[in-house]
Image (cartoon, rainbow, N blue to C red; front, side, top):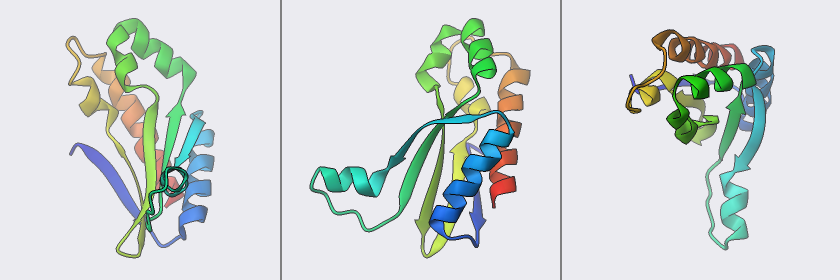
Length: 127
């Protein structure tokens, strides 16, 4: 599966906050948060939905990945998203192991699998 998505009964903002905490517990910091509704409104575009992108990073894992293949930088930092679809709050990410397979030479399989496990664990804990 290319992505990993979970549904939650939590409201949108609670899901975002709980996901940030679950990532922090796993030593992944949120570098940047993009609220698509706000950003599009700044540009004069009305978007009725709720969609936030969290760019997250674990410095040690990023260093390992970059040292194994500098082209990993095309995919850093990792992104996790929270959105509402058909009245249901969802959270997800593209599995890093799938993205690393797109890079010539890839990265050590165990490193990508470890980051997959951390991010999916955070999503499961936050739901």
